[in-house]
Length: 237
Image (cartoon, rainbow, N blue to C red; front, side, top):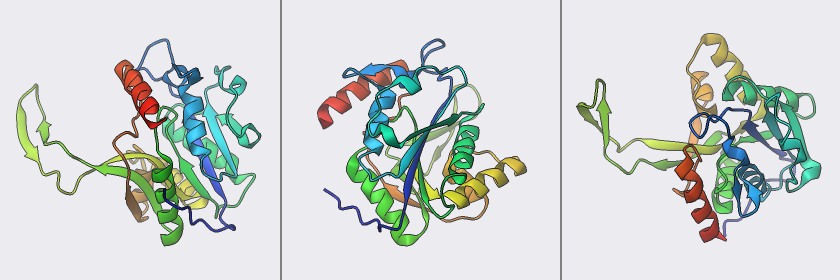
């Protein structure tokens, strides 16, 4: 088991953007509220993050969401809620703005997908240790394993992509609160394509370190991912 080396003066917060429609999963059912082992996916996700000594966690939820506030989350006394946005990045920015009102911009923030309930404790600890020891943003990621093909038109392969330097980004993604808020605001102002927190940090010239995660840190995107998550959680237990 990895040992957490975070110093006492470092406060650690988590942000879980959970306002998305999840349209790739279902037109009518939100993936974060699907049930696994008698708990919602979101409850599993929050419980995994609470394996860390969080000061608190912020759930950015949709305006029509009347489910999240009723769930028995772990460490419920540390739960905060804020309004989500139209896109994931807007939800994250809203949560960062919320935190700015109650804590220091020097605090560390982990942003984690609501539908990623299988992240391991060792991976979380490795991520936090790397970010705090280097004083740099960091993300979990895994090296790309499969041969990649670029397909531009139809189903015809244009070329094979060199995968030797490619990593598949995961979450959590970790940065200082103030740095991340500035990066997202600047990237949005510049019209940059922000696909995750790291892409916003990269846009403003911040160094982001890669911490090797695990392939079982699954993001539930399609219906058959739910059954895979059930198997992973059962195996991890």
